[in-house]
Length: 305
Image (cartoon, rainbow, N blue to C red):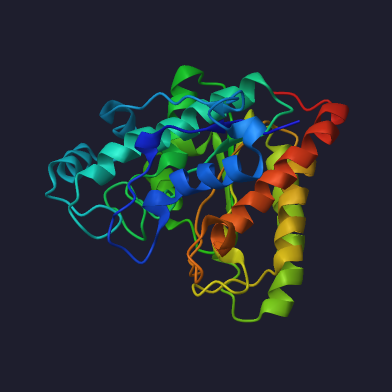
């Protein structure tokens, strides 16, 4: 059993000048998945590599200030990479589109987690980009799904290393939307100062957060599986390989709602330069393996929307 991946080449920009390599990560992630499992994700098989429909600026206006959005597209407002490259917002239409179609697929196929190989969401506020995040795709997707069905409830489980300040800002800006969304962000509590203690406390926090999300009776959970939570990440992680695997296994096996997950952060350098040696891609690949491994258990548990 395999996790569907929702990808379009227009999600990636390979040459954005930035410390973060997230703009080009969707393409590299898919290339690595094709390397490891060509029969599932390769171009001649492709049954698990799903197409993407781009969102529109109107979708962005649901949670972002119109003048801010238009300014980013015009190159007069900074994007999340602190430059005025207009390719970035154009790619965001496909990036967020990937998360939206993955979410709808997950809701239509509840036992099967769906992967959007994207990142750059949770630091974007109602009126500003920042932290390599141009627009808040988590909230755009939540708002779109709620607009389509006012009874829908969305969970956001943010396990990126950093606080999802942009998501919190948008929820405060739109109180009616906040009634339909439960948001839990690990970066609010675990700065990476004491890895041994925080690794233990994080697992307790994760179980508690999932219990709250399950009690909220979500129709969908958006899961940010950040690679920057790794202990070797220069941005301050605290989990080793086993801790990250346990994190992902816990998420996929104990969340009752359908799950759409994305890649989120990761800043370790790829010293050897090849796809197979990229430590960030390796972490994301391990999340995909845990997602695949959970399918049988989620089916047996009767996961429903």
